[in-house]
Image (cartoon, rainbow, N blue to C red):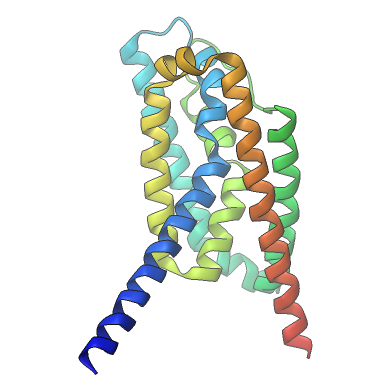
Length: 210
């Protein structure tokens, strides 16, 4: 009996751990820090090391606030608008699917910045906390709960900060072609996540009406 209980607890812990990893990967891939390395390098070109770190920290702060804001206000917004979680998952999946097409084509829509003041826009948003990331955190909190979305946001933000903090070194290693290839691979992963959102939303709507 004790052995069976131990196995059950281990299975639950494993499932929860895999869920945390899944949520992190979903958000991290959509934020696409590796694909944003060339953009970050171009926007901060000519800045001192201190200035570059300052802009990056500001971008990370802005992105964190936006993601937390939409994660926790998302449920209220859906309730006020009378939108079900399933329909939002379908809409969010479609949006992410279009976003994945941009990654696969190597397109990055952002606002050109000057020599300073690029931390909030375009780095913080829309590069890090863009429509795809905002949609993802809203879907994660609706599907998995507060604890999972908090872990996803903070772990993805920390990982993104680490990646972009080493942007020059990574850019030198990968080069332009390597960065583009990595961005396209992430585009395929985002497309798969989008299809999963759409499929789960459709099944949820069908089960509601049956």
